[in-house]
Image 1 (cartoon, rainbow, N blue to C red):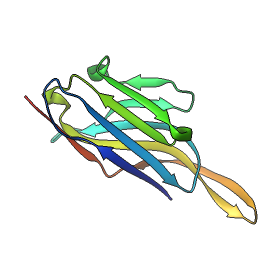
Image 2 (cartoon, rainbow, N blue to C red):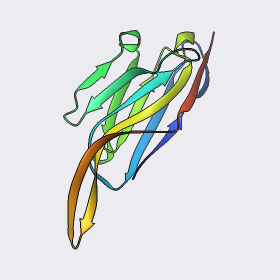
Image 3 (spheres, rainbow, N blue to C red):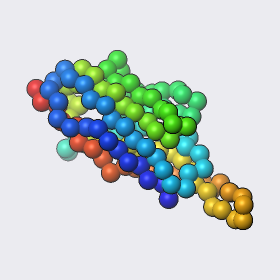
Image 4 (cartoon, helix red, strand yellow):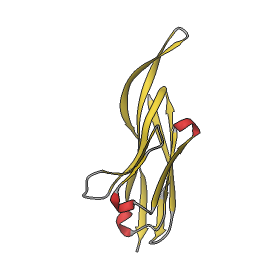
Length: 128
């Protein structure tokens, strides 16, 4: 019902920059929060950065001062600007959206419940 399409990522040298973008589409009634998570080999998935509908942001301590998250396009697009990348930033990065969907009856849309939705993941590799 909700699709998240990620772009960006790739290979970069230590100290370099990358930009990740994610667009949410589908039967979306409202997107509450969006964010980026990452998972390195042998490690659990962790929150990197998030932004809620009010624009409040949250960052993992390890990326504060280096990464910046923003939302636009009516709140259905989230971008993660990553600077001063380190080898420990190497991971698969996943876009997440906490959103409600709708059903249509006649001319009226009715909101359904909220769920978390995930993108397919994009690889970020930082070489030292």
